[in-house]
Length: 290
Image (cartoon, rainbow, N blue to C red; front, side):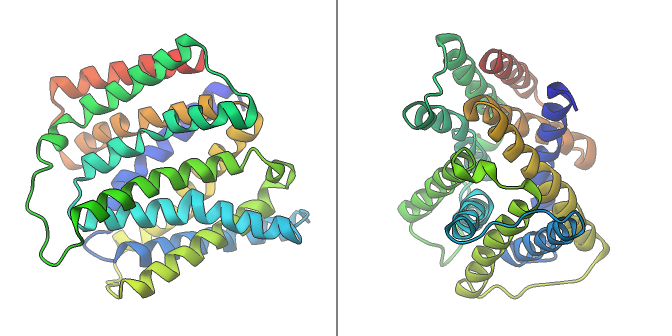
């Protein structure tokens, strides 16, 4: 599979996470959905690893994989969903998430010696600018009323930043000794770690809403197979094989593609500033990865 095909497939799949989050809202509380998604993916990769007789992590490595999965998916999505439920604009959360490639590039330099050129940093800034332009209509509406009984605004901001730090740490964790593990068994263990976080959050937050429907089951199937199954595995694979900063730069394209998917699937109008933002993000990713 060529690098181009891998990159395109990853970005398209990752962008659909925004659509799935919207699709499950009427039917299930977020962490219950995430528990089903991560748990299902853990079972899927366990079966694959057993059939193919993959070597399993043992000892300290087992704990490291559980922690990596908890950070990469469990804490990131659980904290992000919670922040949005507390009144944080989805656009603001998406913009904060777009800071992850910049944070990855900054931390990867001292840890792994990955240094971006001036051209690469220019691409990062251009990509972030593009994301901000795409999200501008949502950011303009960020002053919506805060739900009654929600957490203090400062706590919501802290948790949302924690989400971005979590996915950055989980991504960089893949560059350590964990990179030597078989990706099939490693994915099973890491999704189990993410499922454990979702289960704890669902209990702490008292989540219980679960309304079975065809849309919910379809969202779970897509989340299990395509999002956590293929999408996250591609991210881990790309980070293992190359620079973490170049791999995560692709995340700049997820919000613009999500906006396009919203236009196609839900009739959400695309404004000229969003189209311009898509072009900025595309140019930024090209510069950061060239």
